[in-house]
Image (cartoon, rainbow, N blue to C red):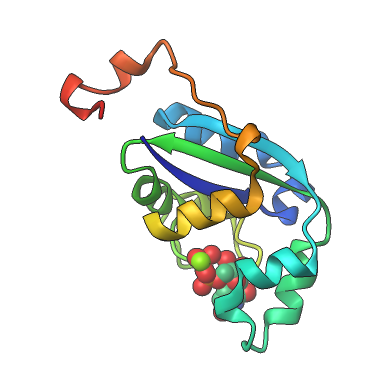
Length: 154
Ligand code: UDP
Ligand code: MG
């Protein structure tokens, strides 16, 4: 099954939205393969947001992502990367569709609730960046056969 990396951003902890965000993923049928709290630093964020280092908002983004610890999650499921990105919504929360996490919980382009991996290739890199091998768990939920049809379980 595919895995993807989610970060619940500091503003999500500040605003008390952690439970509601995690609840959405569980209700959807995604399995939690890993979850932890960690303090991000400039080194890991510069790697993680390498595509943005030259943008004028990068220093503000760094500060925002280091403001408190974050909660990182590795979610697992069929097509998990695409499913979670669709649930996340557009980068700017004001433009994100209602029904998405950003669309329902946010008003900001920067403080947009969560990070979610944007491709299968990046998801693999990001899960390794934020989790060591022994923090990711292989197990099978009892509801698996009720969550998927038999030909989807590969
Ligand atoms: N960001 C921002 N202003 C922008 C674009 C991005 O503050 O104009 C922040 C925002 O927090 C976003 C993060 O940088 O989530 C990473 O940007 P990316 O383009 O990768 O968006 P995402 O994949 O998070 O939708
Ligand atoms: Mg991105």
